[in-house]
Length: 454
Image 1 (cartoon, rainbow, N blue to C red):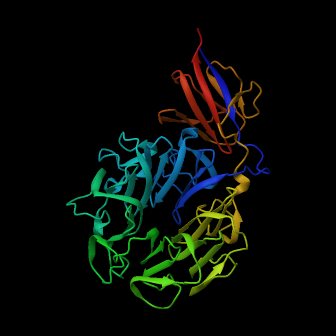
Image 2 (cartoon, rainbow, N blue to C red):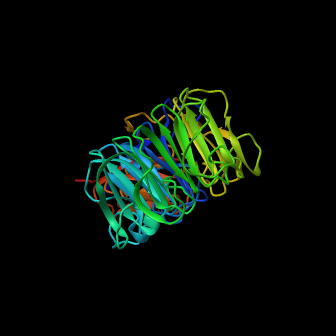
Image 3 (cartoon, rainbow, N blue to C red):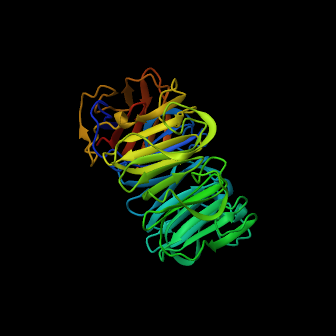
């Protein structure tokens, strides 16, 4: 006979914001959003057509739900349409979703992954970015690796076919890389800037237009500090904070109405430390203030207006000077401040903004912090025999739930998952082996321990 002891980590009252709540976010328009809290927990929301949230289902979520097996060792995230990636603090890399062209990096034997699966066995990854059906990652030794589709030369080197697992791209060492659609951009540890892939509208920035290229140095300067590719263009920041942009300017990327095929200095009177570019550009100035320009077709300006004309003059959002991270996707924007508060605005058609289904548009920056809860940093899970939603404790073979959910998911520590239909507010756990499991119910995650009675 089995006894089921329930240890519950509730998502408590949302009225108390937890300091340093969010630290990393990646999002796909009309798709999924994946994010890491400062306590190391992994969360997702939006529409996971191919299990991009790693929850072993395709249910659309309009508010954050914890994923990643309930653990608190996650560091950062990346996302592409149909798949998500997450990096752990121990240097291991994980992916979930559709494995088209080998884009998950887990080999060719699977078509999709329902819960986060480790990519290989290496534990020395430092960063990860996602492109269209491919990914690029940098190891702690600075080497650059890529996998997935190499269409348009997105991996930067000449491969005759798609790569289904990580392969090293050259021997150089890199500080950072960025990739979106068919173009990649990166900064080596020597401060030089490089571009590759599609150059249809001059987005590589080497002064030419058209074609596809392998890794090509952009100019000769060696004082580049940050870069971001976007829809038909690119941005980069030098070590002195000067911002440069180039490429197709239909959305006002370059903050002018001119078309460039090489880096051109923008707004020389301002200095910048980070930008995220898509149809709109979201930037953080060196004083910590937040600015936006470019397309406003989907309310990216954050001022409740929408229009088809590009905004070529940077517009400050609010007056705060404590912004630390930004992320833009096709139809929306995200920004995180030093308090860990995440703000987002734009289209919320499939819950990608983490707002309720009635909020199709977030017209202004709106805080997501109310969903942070008060979960301790170490996820200190305590025993309670009188839990309100999962009981009794102990139990022989049936777990009773107070929930309206039709189905719940049990996941063990190695990522295996089991779906359970809820019948008469109960689930049958008699087939579970001894071990630790995470029971997911809408609004909470419970850690349960199954033991065989002696």
